[in-house]
Image (cartoon, rainbow over all chains, first blue to last red; front, side, top):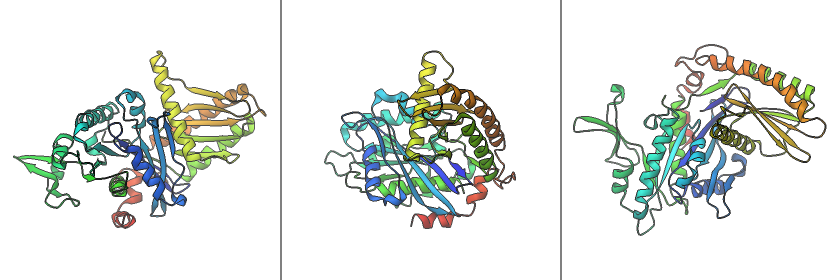
Length: 224
Length: 169
Protein backbone atom coordinates (compact mmCIF):
# COMPACT_ATOMS: atom_id res chain seq x y z
CA UNK A 1 0.00 0.00 0.00
CA UNK A 2 1.99 2.95 -1.21
CA UNK A 3 1.52 6.09 0.83
CA UNK A 4 1.91 9.58 -0.57
CA UNK A 5 2.68 12.19 2.05
CA UNK A 6 2.08 15.62 0.56
CA UNK A 7 3.24 17.31 3.78
CA UNK A 8 6.74 15.79 3.78
CA UNK A 9 6.70 15.22 -0.01
CA UNK A 10 7.44 11.52 0.19
CA UNK A 11 6.22 8.44 -1.65
CA UNK A 12 6.57 5.36 0.54
CA UNK A 13 6.37 1.87 -0.93
CA UNK A 14 6.79 -1.61 0.51
CA UNK A 15 8.78 -4.39 -1.19
CA UNK A 16 8.84 -7.90 0.21
CA UNK A 17 11.53 -10.53 -0.50
CA UNK A 18 9.84 -13.93 -0.34
CA UNK A 19 11.13 -17.46 -0.84
CA UNK A 20 12.26 -20.68 0.81
CA UNK A 21 14.48 -20.80 3.88
CA UNK A 22 18.23 -20.23 3.33
CA UNK A 23 17.52 -19.01 -0.22
CA UNK A 24 19.32 -15.65 0.20
CA UNK A 25 16.59 -13.11 1.05
CA UNK A 26 18.47 -11.66 4.01
CA UNK A 27 21.71 -11.76 1.98
CA UNK A 28 20.04 -9.54 -0.66
CA UNK A 29 19.20 -6.94 1.99
CA UNK A 30 22.61 -7.19 3.63
CA UNK A 31 24.30 -6.51 0.30
CA UNK A 32 22.08 -3.48 -0.33
CA UNK A 33 22.75 -2.23 3.20
CA UNK A 34 26.50 -2.59 2.69
CA UNK A 35 26.62 -0.88 -0.70
CA UNK A 36 24.16 1.99 -0.42
CA UNK A 37 25.44 5.26 0.99
CA UNK A 38 24.45 5.71 4.66
CA UNK A 39 22.77 9.02 3.66
CA UNK A 40 20.22 7.20 1.55
CA UNK A 41 19.39 4.27 3.75
CA UNK A 42 18.22 3.77 7.31
CA UNK A 43 19.17 1.23 9.89
CA UNK A 44 18.72 -2.45 9.05
CA UNK A 45 16.59 -4.28 11.57
CA UNK A 46 16.78 -8.08 11.77
CA UNK A 47 14.47 -10.06 13.99
CA UNK A 48 16.40 -13.31 13.89
CA UNK A 49 17.06 -16.34 16.06
CA UNK A 50 20.42 -16.90 17.76
CA UNK A 51 21.51 -18.91 14.73
CA UNK A 52 20.75 -15.96 12.45
CA UNK A 53 17.65 -17.51 10.91
CA UNK A 54 14.98 -14.87 10.26
CA UNK A 55 12.30 -15.15 12.93
CA UNK A 56 9.91 -12.39 11.93
CA UNK A 57 11.48 -10.14 9.29
CA UNK A 58 14.45 -8.03 8.20
CA UNK A 59 13.74 -4.42 7.41
CA UNK A 60 15.74 -1.85 5.47
CA UNK A 61 14.47 1.57 4.31
CA UNK A 62 16.19 2.93 1.17
CA UNK A 63 15.73 6.24 -0.64
CA UNK A 64 15.92 5.71 -4.38
CA UNK A 65 15.80 9.33 -5.56
CA UNK A 66 13.37 12.14 -6.26
CA UNK A 67 10.52 12.16 -8.78
CA UNK A 68 8.36 15.25 -9.32
CA UNK A 69 9.85 16.69 -6.14
CA UNK A 70 8.78 13.66 -4.09
CA UNK A 71 11.38 11.56 -2.31
CA UNK A 72 10.81 7.89 -3.22
CA UNK A 73 11.38 5.79 -0.14
CA UNK A 74 11.22 2.01 -0.36
CA UNK A 75 10.84 -0.17 2.69
CA UNK A 76 12.43 -3.55 2.00
CA UNK A 77 11.27 -6.52 4.04
CA UNK A 78 12.21 -10.18 4.06
CA UNK A 79 9.97 -12.90 5.44
CA UNK A 80 11.07 -15.92 7.48
CA UNK A 81 11.50 -18.66 4.89
CA UNK A 82 11.00 -21.66 7.15
CA UNK A 83 7.63 -23.36 6.65
CA UNK A 84 6.96 -23.25 10.39
CA UNK A 85 6.70 -19.46 10.47
CA UNK A 86 3.75 -19.00 8.12
CA UNK A 87 1.68 -16.90 10.52
CA UNK A 88 4.34 -14.21 10.81
CA UNK A 89 5.29 -14.52 7.13
CA UNK A 90 1.74 -13.69 6.13
CA UNK A 91 1.68 -10.57 8.31
CA UNK A 92 4.61 -9.07 6.42
CA UNK A 93 2.68 -9.25 3.13
CA UNK A 94 0.06 -6.84 4.43
CA UNK A 95 0.05 -3.73 2.25
CA UNK A 96 2.80 -4.97 -0.08
CA UNK A 97 3.47 -2.98 -3.28
CA UNK A 98 5.95 -5.31 -4.96
CA UNK A 99 7.40 -8.78 -4.45
CA UNK A 100 10.74 -10.42 -5.20
CA UNK A 101 10.69 -14.20 -5.01
CA UNK A 102 14.23 -15.36 -4.20
CA UNK A 103 14.50 -18.93 -5.44
CA UNK A 104 17.35 -21.23 -4.44
CA UNK A 105 18.75 -22.61 -7.71
CA UNK A 106 20.11 -25.80 -6.17
CA UNK A 107 18.40 -28.89 -7.59
CA UNK A 108 17.85 -30.24 -4.07
CA UNK A 109 15.82 -27.12 -3.18
CA UNK A 110 13.39 -27.37 -6.08
CA UNK A 111 10.62 -28.79 -3.92
CA UNK A 112 11.14 -26.11 -1.26
CA UNK A 113 10.96 -23.42 -3.99
CA UNK A 114 7.70 -24.79 -5.36
CA UNK A 115 6.20 -25.09 -1.88
CA UNK A 116 7.18 -21.51 -1.03
CA UNK A 117 5.76 -20.18 -4.33
CA UNK A 118 2.47 -21.95 -3.66
CA UNK A 119 2.49 -20.51 -0.13
CA UNK A 120 3.02 -17.03 -1.60
CA UNK A 121 0.02 -17.40 -3.92
CA UNK A 122 -2.10 -18.70 -1.03
CA UNK A 123 -1.13 -15.96 1.41
CA UNK A 124 -1.63 -13.25 -1.21
CA UNK A 125 -5.06 -14.53 -2.15
CA UNK A 126 -6.09 -14.60 1.51
CA UNK A 127 -5.52 -10.83 1.52
CA UNK A 128 -7.41 -10.55 -1.75
CA UNK A 129 -4.25 -9.58 -3.68
CA UNK A 130 -3.65 -10.96 -7.16
CA UNK A 131 0.00 -11.84 -7.69
CA UNK A 132 -0.38 -11.70 -11.46
CA UNK A 133 -1.41 -8.05 -11.27
CA UNK A 134 1.11 -6.55 -8.88
CA UNK A 135 4.83 -5.87 -9.49
CA UNK A 136 6.49 -9.24 -9.09
CA UNK A 137 9.85 -10.67 -10.16
CA UNK A 138 11.71 -13.91 -9.57
CA UNK A 139 15.39 -13.97 -8.68
CA UNK A 140 17.18 -17.28 -9.30
CA UNK A 141 19.89 -17.09 -6.68
CA UNK A 142 23.07 -19.16 -6.15
CA UNK A 143 23.74 -19.47 -9.88
CA UNK A 144 27.44 -20.05 -9.10
CA UNK A 145 26.86 -23.39 -7.39
CA UNK A 146 27.74 -26.59 -9.31
CA UNK A 147 24.40 -28.16 -8.40
CA UNK A 148 22.35 -25.22 -9.73
CA UNK A 149 19.44 -26.39 -11.88
CA UNK A 150 19.22 -25.00 -15.45
CA UNK A 151 17.19 -21.77 -15.60
CA UNK A 152 14.74 -23.32 -18.06
CA UNK A 153 13.88 -26.03 -15.50
CA UNK A 154 13.41 -23.42 -12.76
CA UNK A 155 11.25 -21.36 -15.11
CA UNK A 156 9.12 -24.39 -15.95
CA UNK A 157 8.49 -25.13 -12.28
CA UNK A 158 8.25 -21.67 -10.75
CA UNK A 159 7.22 -19.37 -13.58
CA UNK A 160 5.06 -21.44 -15.94
CA UNK A 161 2.82 -18.42 -16.66
CA UNK A 162 -0.79 -17.42 -16.18
CA UNK A 163 -3.56 -16.78 -18.69
CA UNK A 164 -3.80 -13.14 -19.76
CA UNK A 165 -7.51 -12.46 -20.05
CA UNK A 166 -7.51 -8.66 -20.41
CA UNK A 167 -7.81 -8.05 -24.18
CA UNK A 168 -5.78 -4.83 -23.87
CA UNK A 169 -2.79 -6.81 -22.62
CA UNK A 170 -2.99 -9.56 -25.21
CA UNK A 171 0.05 -8.56 -27.21
CA UNK A 172 3.59 -9.89 -27.35
CA UNK A 173 5.80 -8.19 -24.75
CA UNK A 174 9.48 -9.00 -25.22
CA UNK A 175 11.56 -9.58 -22.09
CA UNK A 176 14.16 -6.79 -22.23
CA UNK A 177 16.57 -8.78 -20.06
CA UNK A 178 16.44 -11.98 -22.14
CA UNK A 179 16.53 -11.53 -25.93
CA UNK A 180 14.29 -14.00 -27.73
CA UNK A 181 12.03 -14.50 -24.72
CA UNK A 182 8.68 -12.84 -24.05
CA UNK A 183 6.91 -11.77 -20.87
CA UNK A 184 3.55 -12.04 -22.63
CA UNK A 185 3.27 -14.55 -25.42
CA UNK A 186 0.70 -16.50 -27.40
CA UNK A 187 1.00 -20.25 -26.82
CA UNK A 188 -1.36 -22.52 -28.76
CA UNK A 189 -4.06 -19.88 -29.07
CA UNK A 190 -3.83 -18.75 -25.46
CA UNK A 191 -2.15 -15.60 -24.15
CA UNK A 192 0.26 -16.38 -21.32
CA UNK A 193 2.04 -13.92 -19.02
CA UNK A 194 5.24 -14.56 -17.05
CA UNK A 195 6.95 -12.74 -14.21
CA UNK A 196 10.28 -11.21 -15.21
CA UNK A 197 13.25 -13.13 -13.82
CA UNK A 198 16.88 -12.50 -13.04
CA UNK A 199 19.88 -14.62 -12.18
CA UNK A 200 21.91 -13.78 -9.09
CA UNK A 201 24.72 -14.70 -6.75
CA UNK A 202 23.54 -12.61 -3.81
CA UNK A 203 26.49 -13.47 -1.61
CA UNK A 204 28.74 -11.70 -4.16
CA UNK A 205 26.13 -9.04 -4.89
CA UNK A 206 25.63 -10.17 -8.50
CA UNK A 207 22.09 -9.35 -9.62
CA UNK A 208 21.04 -7.85 -6.28
CA UNK A 209 20.69 -4.24 -7.41
CA UNK A 210 19.30 -5.29 -10.80
CA UNK A 211 16.50 -7.06 -8.94
CA UNK A 212 15.81 -4.10 -6.66
CA UNK A 213 15.80 -1.70 -9.61
CA UNK A 214 13.52 -3.91 -11.69
CA UNK A 215 10.83 -4.28 -9.04
CA UNK A 216 10.94 -0.75 -7.66
CA UNK A 217 10.64 0.62 -11.19
CA UNK A 218 7.61 -1.62 -11.75
CA UNK A 219 6.08 -0.29 -8.51
CA UNK A 220 6.60 3.36 -9.46
CA UNK A 221 5.17 2.72 -12.91
CA UNK A 222 1.96 1.43 -11.35
CA UNK A 223 1.58 4.92 -9.88
CA UNK A 224 2.07 6.66 -13.22
CA UNK B 1 -8.24 -6.32 -5.94
CA UNK B 2 -4.91 -6.45 -7.74
CA UNK B 3 -2.86 -5.35 -4.77
CA UNK B 4 -3.03 -3.12 -1.77
CA UNK B 5 -4.78 0.20 -2.24
CA UNK B 6 -2.74 3.38 -2.04
CA UNK B 7 -3.65 6.34 0.05
CA UNK B 8 -2.44 9.87 0.45
CA UNK B 9 -2.96 12.79 2.71
CA UNK B 10 -2.73 16.50 2.13
CA UNK B 11 -1.07 19.27 4.11
CA UNK B 12 -4.50 20.20 5.53
CA UNK B 13 -5.03 16.67 6.80
CA UNK B 14 -1.58 16.79 8.28
CA UNK B 15 -2.27 20.08 10.10
CA UNK B 16 -5.50 18.73 11.57
CA UNK B 17 -3.78 15.56 12.73
CA UNK B 18 -0.98 17.59 14.31
CA UNK B 19 -3.41 19.85 16.15
CA UNK B 20 -5.25 16.91 17.67
CA UNK B 21 -2.04 15.20 18.68
CA UNK B 22 -0.64 18.39 20.24
CA UNK B 23 -3.83 18.87 22.27
CA UNK B 24 -3.61 15.24 23.38
CA UNK B 25 0.04 15.63 24.47
CA UNK B 26 -0.83 18.77 26.41
CA UNK B 27 -3.76 17.07 28.20
CA UNK B 28 -2.00 13.80 28.93
CA UNK B 29 1.49 15.15 29.68
CA UNK B 30 2.96 12.43 27.46
CA UNK B 31 6.29 13.11 25.71
CA UNK B 32 5.67 12.18 22.14
CA UNK B 33 2.99 10.78 19.84
CA UNK B 34 3.60 8.99 16.55
CA UNK B 35 1.17 7.79 13.93
CA UNK B 36 2.20 4.71 12.00
CA UNK B 37 0.19 3.04 9.27
CA UNK B 38 -0.48 -0.69 9.41
CA UNK B 39 2.17 -1.40 6.80
CA UNK B 40 4.86 0.22 8.95
CA UNK B 41 5.15 3.66 7.36
CA UNK B 42 5.55 6.61 9.69
CA UNK B 43 2.75 9.12 9.11
CA UNK B 44 3.40 11.82 11.72
CA UNK B 45 5.44 12.61 14.82
CA UNK B 46 4.48 15.26 17.35
CA UNK B 47 6.14 16.30 20.63
CA UNK B 48 9.75 15.63 21.70
CA UNK B 49 11.70 14.50 18.64
CA UNK B 50 12.52 10.78 19.07
CA UNK B 51 16.21 9.99 19.57
CA UNK B 52 15.87 6.64 17.77
CA UNK B 53 15.53 5.60 14.13
CA UNK B 54 11.85 6.38 13.56
CA UNK B 55 11.55 4.35 10.31
CA UNK B 56 12.73 1.21 12.11
CA UNK B 57 10.53 2.06 15.06
CA UNK B 58 7.48 2.38 12.78
CA UNK B 59 8.09 -0.98 11.07
CA UNK B 60 8.47 -2.74 14.43
CA UNK B 61 5.32 -1.05 15.77
CA UNK B 62 3.25 -2.31 12.84
CA UNK B 63 4.67 -5.82 13.23
CA UNK B 64 4.01 -5.74 16.98
CA UNK B 65 0.43 -4.62 16.46
CA UNK B 66 -0.24 -7.15 13.68
CA UNK B 67 1.21 -10.01 15.72
CA UNK B 68 -1.01 -9.04 18.66
CA UNK B 69 -4.03 -8.87 16.37
CA UNK B 70 -3.45 -12.48 15.42
CA UNK B 71 -2.93 -13.46 19.06
CA UNK B 72 -6.27 -11.82 19.90
CA UNK B 73 -8.02 -13.85 17.22
CA UNK B 74 -6.42 -17.07 18.48
CA UNK B 75 -7.90 -16.58 21.94
CA UNK B 76 -11.30 -15.71 20.47
CA UNK B 77 -11.12 -11.90 20.66
CA UNK B 78 -11.90 -9.78 17.64
CA UNK B 79 -8.88 -7.53 18.32
CA UNK B 80 -6.80 -5.85 20.99
CA UNK B 81 -7.70 -2.24 20.27
CA UNK B 82 -4.86 -1.00 22.44
CA UNK B 83 -1.59 -2.30 23.85
CA UNK B 84 0.69 -1.14 26.64
CA UNK B 85 4.42 -1.77 27.03
CA UNK B 86 5.49 -0.61 30.44
CA UNK B 87 9.15 -0.01 31.27
CA UNK B 88 10.86 1.23 34.42
CA UNK B 89 11.14 4.79 33.12
CA UNK B 90 9.77 4.88 29.60
CA UNK B 91 6.50 3.33 28.48
CA UNK B 92 4.42 3.02 25.33
CA UNK B 93 0.71 3.04 24.70
CA UNK B 94 -0.53 1.90 21.28
CA UNK B 95 -4.07 2.22 19.98
CA UNK B 96 -5.84 1.40 16.74
CA UNK B 97 -7.19 4.30 14.66
CA UNK B 98 -9.76 3.53 11.94
CA UNK B 99 -8.25 0.04 11.40
CA UNK B 100 -5.54 1.55 9.22
CA UNK B 101 -3.30 3.55 11.52
CA UNK B 102 -1.72 3.04 14.95
CA UNK B 103 -1.34 5.82 17.51
CA UNK B 104 1.85 5.31 19.52
CA UNK B 105 2.30 7.39 22.68
CA UNK B 106 5.63 7.54 24.48
CA UNK B 107 5.41 8.65 28.09
CA UNK B 108 7.47 8.64 31.28
CA UNK B 109 7.00 9.21 35.00
CA UNK B 110 5.65 12.73 34.48
CA UNK B 111 2.27 11.16 33.80
CA UNK B 112 0.37 7.95 34.48
CA UNK B 113 -0.90 5.16 32.27
CA UNK B 114 -4.43 5.93 33.46
CA UNK B 115 -4.27 9.53 32.25
CA UNK B 116 -2.69 8.54 28.93
CA UNK B 117 -5.42 5.94 28.35
CA UNK B 118 -8.19 8.34 29.37
CA UNK B 119 -7.04 11.20 27.15
CA UNK B 120 -5.99 8.72 24.45
CA UNK B 121 -9.57 7.58 24.05
CA UNK B 122 -10.69 11.08 23.01
CA UNK B 123 -7.68 11.48 20.71
CA UNK B 124 -8.41 8.15 19.01
CA UNK B 125 -12.02 9.18 18.44
CA UNK B 126 -11.11 12.48 16.79
CA UNK B 127 -8.31 10.91 14.74
CA UNK B 128 -10.63 8.12 13.62
CA UNK B 129 -13.02 10.75 12.27
CA UNK B 130 -10.24 12.51 10.33
CA UNK B 131 -8.87 9.28 8.86
CA UNK B 132 -12.28 7.93 7.92
CA UNK B 133 -12.97 11.15 6.05
CA UNK B 134 -9.59 10.83 4.32
CA UNK B 135 -10.22 7.23 3.28
CA UNK B 136 -13.74 8.08 2.10
CA UNK B 137 -12.15 10.59 -0.22
CA UNK B 138 -10.39 7.84 -2.20
CA UNK B 139 -10.34 9.17 -5.69
CA UNK B 140 -9.86 12.72 -4.51
CA UNK B 141 -6.59 14.60 -4.85
CA UNK B 142 -4.95 16.63 -2.12
CA UNK B 143 -7.19 19.58 -2.82
CA UNK B 144 -10.26 17.38 -2.86
CA UNK B 145 -10.18 17.15 -6.66
CA UNK B 146 -10.43 13.85 -8.42
CA UNK B 147 -7.28 12.93 -10.29
CA UNK B 148 -7.58 12.02 -13.97
CA UNK B 149 -7.17 8.32 -13.23
CA UNK B 150 -9.38 8.40 -10.17
CA UNK B 151 -6.58 8.47 -7.62
CA UNK B 152 -4.28 11.29 -6.57
CA UNK B 153 -1.25 9.08 -7.29
CA UNK B 154 -2.17 8.85 -10.93
CA UNK B 155 -2.19 12.63 -11.13
CA UNK B 156 1.07 12.85 -9.26
CA UNK B 157 3.22 10.54 -11.37
CA UNK B 158 1.28 10.64 -14.62
CA UNK B 159 3.68 11.14 -17.49
CA UNK B 160 6.66 10.64 -15.19
CA UNK B 161 7.84 7.47 -16.98
CA UNK B 162 10.92 9.28 -18.30
CA UNK B 163 11.83 10.49 -14.84
CA UNK B 164 11.34 7.00 -13.45
CA UNK B 165 13.55 5.53 -16.20
CA UNK B 166 16.21 8.17 -15.50
CA UNK B 167 16.15 7.37 -11.80
CA UNK B 168 17.22 3.82 -12.55
CA UNK B 169 19.79 4.73 -15.19
